[in-house]
Image 1 (cartoon, rainbow, N blue to C red):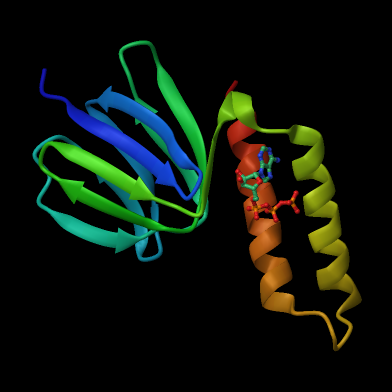
Image 2: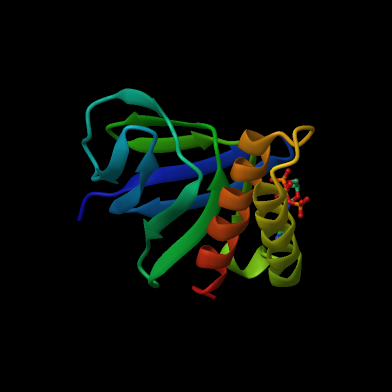
Length: 133
Ligand code: ATP
């Protein structure tokens, strides 16, 4: 079976390396399903789970923002942050979600709503990925 290399890199260094025959995630333009041999392209990513099919099962990674570079034999993701499902601090994500929801609800003029919405999306993404431990 044909496979391709997957690497996820953040400013803190490599976050994930693997070999796969299918990767799925979400770009800002919509869902992406990537098989080996895909045409080369670069796309901005949404804050969404990256699912990497491996021989052992499926790895889930919470990726926040960034870009995906697809080549026929490799997928590279450069993101601001990335955590594997078992690296996620659930308590921290729950607190971050509460904080963001409160900020959005309070809607005080000095609060940057867009920033709170991004924080909420990061927290929801982490909690979603943490379900797959
Ligand atoms: P918080 O408000 O809890 O800091 P955040 O969404 O603002 O959340 P980020 O700025 O996205 O955090 O990430 C900062 C760093 O902390 C990154 O290295 C990220 O991987 C890590 N991180 C953030 N939240 C978690 C979490 N729940 N579990 C594990 N690592 C996390």
